[in-house]
Image (cartoon, rainbow, N blue to C red; front, side):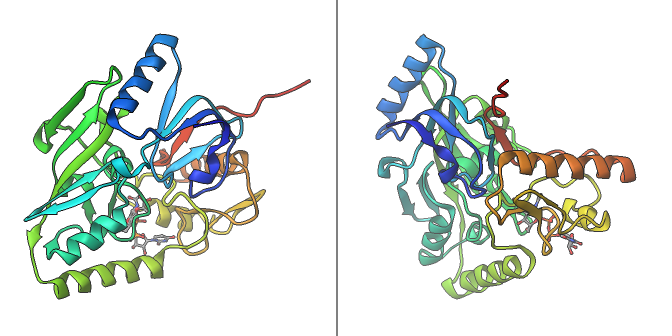
Length: 290
Ligand code: EPU
């Protein structure tokens, strides 16, 4: 546990202020007790996964930030066609274990820098696949500390969103694949990774900043607007992929917000498109003095 913890270091974009309190619970029981204390005292809390889809504002986060990074939340347990994964398990490790056990369908997870918990909350996707395609069931904890298990069919999910997990905390999931040869799985995994390497930049970013609007990729739209390379302070729109904002010169959350606003305005004024951020914006703007 830490007080006034610089939680930006737990995000891939590497911007933003401190959380009042930071905690990595070591068990589901401890998590439930913490949630109860938050309820009793009216403390706001936020659960951070790998932080690859999060923009923490420069004023930091009032209340508590929780990460399920303890080993007790990160198990990856394969059994025949299924893999039971804790919310803290890393997606690339899940993909590697699926490969080792000859389970196909999870290759797309290899290049996504996230955890199972975050990928469930966001219904993360890549290579025309998304998380809920490989989910059989999930377990989550509600804000009273009660654990619920639900089959995939009973969990509404859409493009980059699983609304049930807005107010509940994913604890674990059962993923299901299909048998295939390790060589065929490896071939697909390498092809996907290569495609990602060719089309996406490697610097500090939160992946795609905007959801794709209907009919066009946000990256292509931003390229057509001539905005690649546009800079605000320490951050700029990637030259490689228009939907990535790269923090290459110690930028701030304010810089990122400035660039987001510029893109949104241009997309609306010139193309009538209302872009929506895919990245979750968390916390408070900096306090103004004087
Ligand atoms: N394109 C451009 N210019 C650009 C970027 C893309 O013209 O700067 C064109 C590409 O040439 C292609 C089309 O737009 O014809 C689609 O591009 P891409 O295949 O890169 O896919 P995307 O729609 O931009 C989506 C996901 C990515 C995921 C990739 C690959 C969203 C918002 N993005 O990107 O997910 O990795 O497909 O499967 O759904 C993320 O969610 O953070 C993310 C990176």
